[in-house]
Image (cartoon, rainbow, N blue to C red):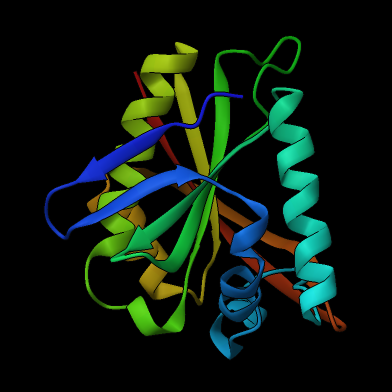
Length: 176
């Protein structure tokens, strides 16, 4: 697997492929209260985070996902990942997901990272559609998507059930 590095100018950070060394930052990002509310499951300890990172690396080698670490001044700041790459009958589309470490939120980093990975995905995979989902209560994530050029296509009501509560999801997309 060739390591891809994408450099941002403002705010300044790099995007690079995920490595095993990202497990601690990944765990801290996913275990934050804000992240735990929005995701169906999060790693409960560093061991689980390491296992998830290893799964990402394995899936990347098989061409199913392409996860990027956001690195600011050598520190783990979060991730952006492309999902469902190369699926039969759906090669024209993919999904994007992301999470930012609590120490880096509110600085415009994720909006820029999503724009960069989206542009990269359309070029590399010749996509016609890139989708994203976020909970209706996750206003910061919706703001990232809107500022990144995604359009709200609708709301999937009671799309997921977590801890006995039904959650609504917003469906966002960019099409080319």
